[in-house]
Length: 117
Image (cartoon, rainbow, N blue to C red; front, side, top):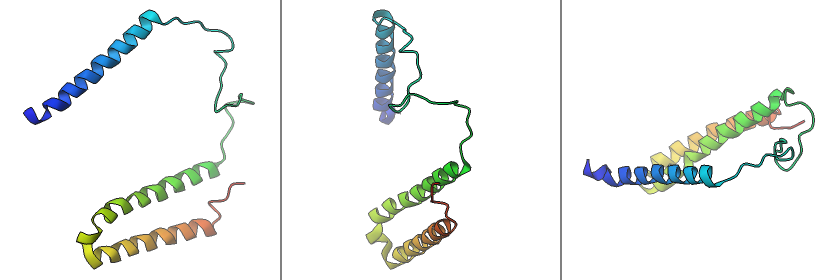
């Protein structure tokens, strides 16, 4: 239990500091809404059209492929850290893993899943 005491103290300080800052902001800060401040504004561009428009399925496909390949690339870091301890067997396993990853990438490329129209 004493090993976790610094973590609990740190957590308590974070909660108290957050509460104090939000309380001071509520008491001291003024809220002055205006029509210009209440307008929606995103990414430096004023919104044009309806927000209820359908998004093409290709957007979601590219996003999922990006996440998939990004997560698989994360597995390279622990392998690189333990590379010397794993030896030749670890190298062969990683080459098989990268081969499977490359096959999936080539498949997605041939199906034109990475092209934005």
